[in-house]
Amino acid sequence: MVLGIEDITGGTTILAFFIWLGLTGLFYLVCYMAALNTFDDLTGNHPVKLLAMAGIAPLSAFLMAMFDYNPTVLFVLMAISNFYRVKNAARSDVTRFKGKNASKPLFYTASYLYICAVFGLALWFQNPVETGEATQPYWKTWFPQE
Image (cartoon, rainbow, N blue to C red):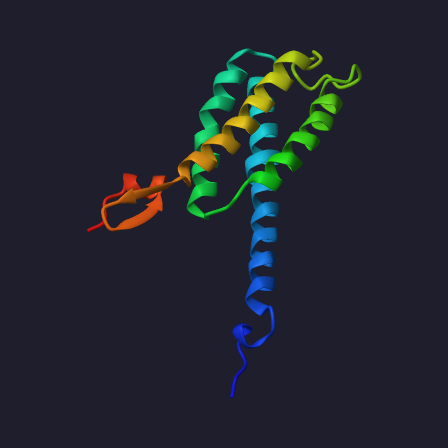
């Protein structure tokens, strides 16, 4: 007889927690660290940063919705760590943006716009919708079942 994860008391709950923990780490690295730092380097102190951050937010939110991930803890983690990320980028000795210091208002506005948009859109995409006989997340209604 082979024991499965279901045979261990609390096994599926523990497995679900580890999957959630892994997804949190993955989304933190990809949707926060990589996305914000990449777009900071690409846009620098230019106001187009606001449009770029608003443009990539639906992509990150859709990715979270596809994995049925609740981003509440990630939102808090990103909001707190973003304060320190921008604070470090805007120091007077850091001149990585064409020899200039980072504009604090622009960086804070753009990054928190992105973080709030990702959180709100991820929840909206996962909002349950009744479609005839079944209830499914909103994003699944975009793709008709054959």
